[in-house]
Amino acid sequence: MRFRPALVSLTGFATLVAVAVSGATCKGGDPAPAATPPKSPIEPAKVQPPEPVVKAPEVTDIPGVDISLVPPSFRADFVRLMNETFCYCGCPRTLASCLSNRADCGCVKCSERMTQFILEQFRVGMSTQDVEFQLLEGFAEGFNGPNIEVDTSNHPMKGKQDARHTMIEFADFRCGHCAAAFPVVKKLVETRPDVRVFYFYFPLGDDQSPSILIAEAAEEARKQGKFWEYAEQLFLNQHNLDPAKLMELAQKVGLDKAKLKDALDKHTHRATVLSDKRLGISLGVASTPTFYVDGRPFGLDRTLDSFVMRLDMESERGQCK
Image (cartoon, rainbow, N blue to C red):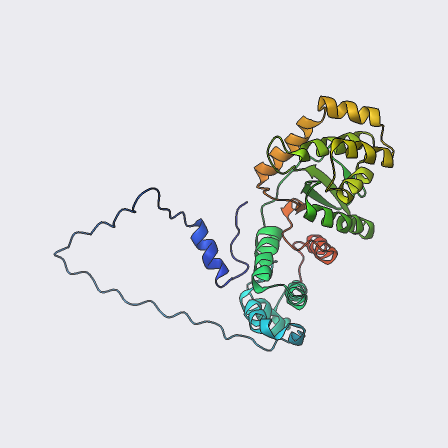
């Protein structure tokens, strides 16, 4: 997915990103030496040195922000990020500048939300690199990322059909992180009636991966109206999902075992599973779980608070004050 212009100035991390995307490569053997330019008989014109860039003074005392909540070893990084990070709504001021001049800033609420997120991440022990990564993935390339359109018909859905917000998840039933996210998403839908969640299969591994057959079983469960019940059992038993276990869990949730066995024997739903994976790959999905919220990448830590925050951000898109 395309990187959008900097909402965040990330010291060090941005340098690594710049190197990664610069395209500079050495292929096979020694790199060719640089050509020596021919000497000119004409005296070159003198070039005036550029004017020095004057940086805005750093704001260290931010009204309304209790920096004592940040572990001492991270306070300097917290202050730096507050002075380098711009609000996700497009405000030309940094978070520190906005919150220090609230009367002159039109996006105080957005800046407060983003500041609280950064503070909380440091408070719970996230590293500076983790926080910077989430600012990039969750805000710069997430909330402000490109909007995608995905056909969600004939996919498992949790929530109300007419919910205002739509989330889609690409996941693998053998993925531990997907298993950890499952109850969080379940709680989110229970507490936020304005969101619906669609599940897309993304079996990790090659064409012989056992994750494919497991996803086929889940698709048969969807056909029988028991996807979410069966999915929960698959995640709870993800370290033991051989064909016999798939049948055992089917009986536990009330599936028609004969229909399931027939579907697995004939690989009735394999094309559906692999179609989901191809879609994910075309969108740039490379790991699981991967979430999209209203067509844009999620990119934050997969906690209930972060999902709720993102939904609130979407509800206020274009209306930040």
